[in-house]
Length: 234
Image (cartoon, rainbow, N blue to C red; front, side, top):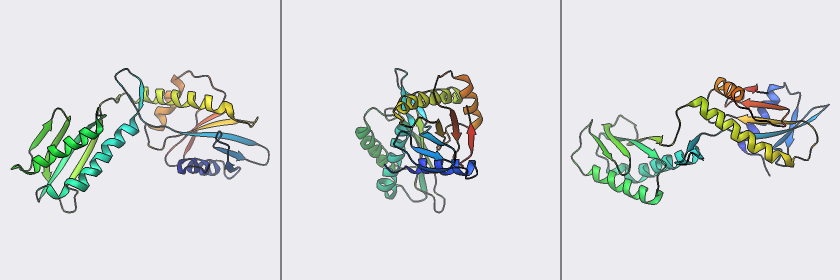
């Protein structure tokens, strides 16, 4: 199986970090890659750190999936509703996710906004729909500005960044401990945590890693930033 773009990025980052001491080759999944030098062959499992949210029972959800729905709704509105918005005006929307019935939500939101377009609106007017949990503000459309601007708010997110980072690390490490039991190689096994969407700053993850107590068999664990900077956590 070919490496994913984020896996290739992490592999290249390791080669740069170690001054080309290693070259890499694709692994059997697990691991994702092997780092190979003249004296050793290291198995490296790569995982991406993603934002989380919590459902009503407190169970962890994939926040990226929930937020992506809101972004897709925004793209759909831009393609279907833009021509109905009066000249000189733009809609600034606050969309709150997740929603119970995505299909009905998209239909009802479109009808609500299209109905606004037929009203006598002026710059600065604000509207809301409590059932859809959406806020709309009418703003002046500057030259070249999109007619629909969206802000996606996750209702189930936790504002405690350190707490979130602790949970994210623990979940990813535990998941990879189980997966890496299948690694055939008898050599060293490293874990690379890729902070590709910058869920939290490096210093937050460093502190979060110190706070959690998760037994693991990885010889080393690394944090890889979106810029390719590598920081060893253990």
